[in-house]
Amino acid sequence: MTVPYKDILLALAKSKVRYLVAGGFAVNFHNYNRSTADLDLIIHLEPKNAEMFDAMMTDLGYRPRVPVSGKDLGDESKRREWIMEKNMVVFTYINPNNPMEIIDIFVEEPKPFEEMYKDRLVSDVFDVKINVVGYDDLVEMKKKAGRPKDQIDLLELEKRNGK
Image (tube, rainbow, N blue to C red; front, side, top):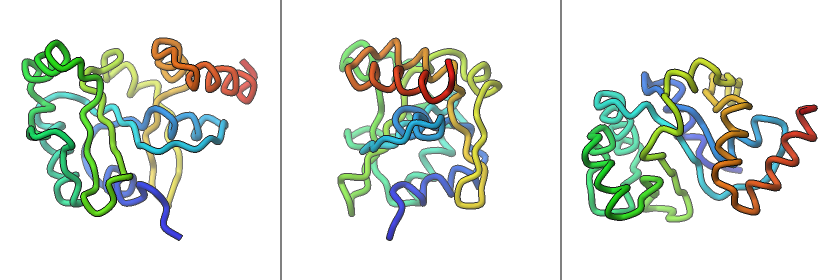
């Protein structure tokens, strides 16, 4: 059996890319197991980190869904343009061999990356350390998103984490 996104999680753990797992995968790391189709990541959006991330994704065979370069994730003016003109929230990479493998990268850090990184949860998975959004930041992100599934996640997270 193949584990979804295992190659990416292993590559991230072995790389120098500064990242945090967010979204549904992060919910799972915080004691509420639910299925999710995509892997949401927050990467530090400084140019060198974004370039390393894009190179890693390219090496793994993933491609941007839209016809732009993933290297542009490190360009604040490009990201601002995507947000303003395209209402972009995430930059998506897909696996051309399996279009159901979707990796969404936030084009705007929900709050300064260093703050979130300092409060991260580090989990052991596949014999490597995985950086996951901390509980309080995850709750804040879920509240801000406000979708019905986020409301359910919040209730379950609070129940399972004694909050």
